[in-house]
Amino acid sequence: MPATLNAADRRQLLERFLRYVAVDTQSDDASTTSPSTEKQKDLARLLADELRALGCGDAAMNEWGYVFATIPGNLPAGHPAAGSVPTIGLIAHMDTYFATPGGGVRPRVIESYDGGDIELGPGQVLDVTGNPNLARCVGQTLIHTDGTTLLGADDKAGVAEIMTLVAWLRDHPEFLHGPIRIAFTTDEEVGRGTEHFDVGAFGADYAYTLDGSDLGEIEDETFCADTALVTVTGHDVHPGYAKGKLVNAVRVAAAIIDRLDPNHLPETTEARQPYLHPYTISGNVSTIELKLLVRAFSIEELREREDHLRQVIAGVSTRFPAAKIDLAIQESYRNMAYKIREDIKVLDYALEAVERVGIEPKRQAIRGGTDGARLSFMGLLTPNIWAGGQSFHSVREWVSLEWMAAAVAATLEILTVWVERSAKA
Image (tube, rainbow, N blue to C red; front, side, top):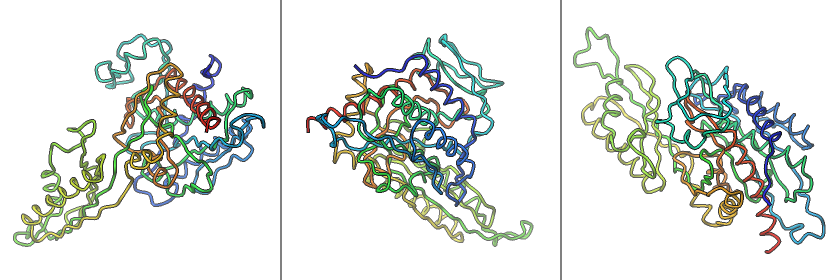
């Protein structure tokens, strides 16, 4: 019989989540430190303390702000799987998105949601038309903000779920499981969540991130991702005496953006379609720095988007021959599917577990990335489990408590599947 969370468990899950979103943990895309913001360590210290209180004696925060802890396996010596169950890692990230206000979160809780539009605050409405998953959550407990900040369900929902799982295991010593490793990471939102992650020291054989969205989703694909940095160097002179001399880097950068294929932008693509996304621009007439995200599900399509950018730059260079345009491509991460398909049971066991808890599993590709993408290429296969959050990176972010509780139950069942399969091996 699959494990379930009772009313007290769900109340504690909600209390944990509300406690964690109150801590400002926004990362900083412009920072070169690690973690990119010291305030991420505020939540890290809190989690390390709570883990120790829950019986994880080795729980600690390291210099990079990561939190690690261990739950030993509890199979009796005579159990058919004793000594053969792989160590399973459970991972979530503590930081929140950097480009939307994330401090001073004021969460609001709706018990028994009635199915209508939700007024968040002046000028902000969580509408049913724009959020079709609201219709799936009628009667449930929803958490949202006042429409001025992120909620932080990405990924504090995952953090709260893992912490609730740890507490549930402490309270249910009869539940048999193999060894478990816990990790909470920093800087996932700026693409540096695994920058200092030592896979060997972590000691897990397989892992799962709890960082997804919709109920029942198990994600084994991410984008392949690069970042393109375009540097435009012009020549500034007094505009009153500029004829034949001024080379305006601002106009050059604007021309590059204008020539991007409108059919391959984030706002015009969906599902498995790739895109180029100009997302930051800074500078002046003399020098402009333009950053673009390059995203595709295959390396081949990723290269096509980068080649398109090169063609755009070549055309603009012809129009502005006196400008100097430099392009640098930085690799971010690759589609985890390339690695997970090498040992597919890490995915299959998760899909089976979801079905066992009475939820229809949905194998999904993420139009984004997770720590699991990089970890999979670092030797730790790490698909992603839903955490329940909706409208990520938005002041309209919300989450269902029931979907969060279901993620805990499904993760517990994943542990059971690993025990059963190890016994048959």
